[in-house]
Amino acid sequence: MARTYKYQSIKNNIVKMSVESLIEEFNALVGKRYWTSARATHDAAVIDTFIKRGVDVSAIYNGKSISFLRPVALDATRSKLVTI
Image (cartoon, rainbow, N blue to C red; front, side):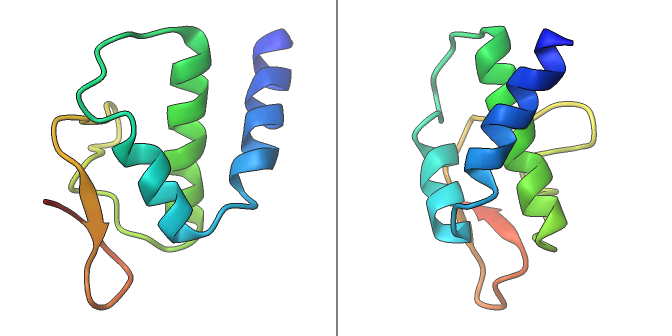
């Protein structure tokens, strides 16, 4: 129950962000190696929001795990994340 509430709380803030802000949010975590349940919740909400907005996240998400090895940018068509 608390986990669901935490996710909804974070998700409610993230869904208000622009795609550009979501990219900044993601890129700020590139290379960070710490991991907490709050971070996992945040990351899942960012990916879910990209997907719901029709952004292809296959460059960083394979359906099971998220890669924070490289920063991302939006390609020219504004529908796909690419690593940079």
